[in-house]
Amino acid sequence: MPTTVHIPEALLARVDARARAMRISRNRLVVMALEEKLTPPRRWPPEVVRLLSTPVGRPLAQEVDRMMASIRSARRSRKKPVKL
Image 1 (cartoon, rainbow, N blue to C red):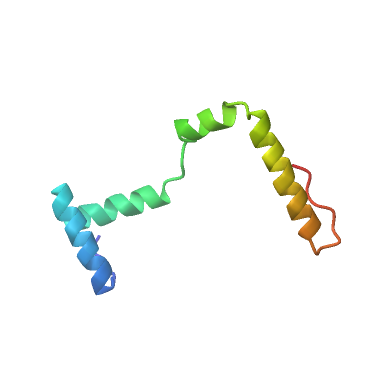
Image 2: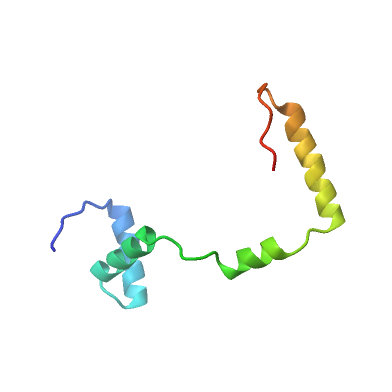
């Protein structure tokens, strides 16, 4: 379905350059970008899963504790912080 969209010149130049580099039409690139942006992720990327499943070493855990203590001491709200 034909649609008119107003794109700033600088952005359109970047779109055209990328489309040429990919050897696809401007229209195809815009459709691909919209599909990617509007499709919810199905799962977390493997590198995120790997990082979350890797145990944290003692030095890092201590540094996180120090950082959290610093954040707590600088809080101005009287509400209790959310338990993580």
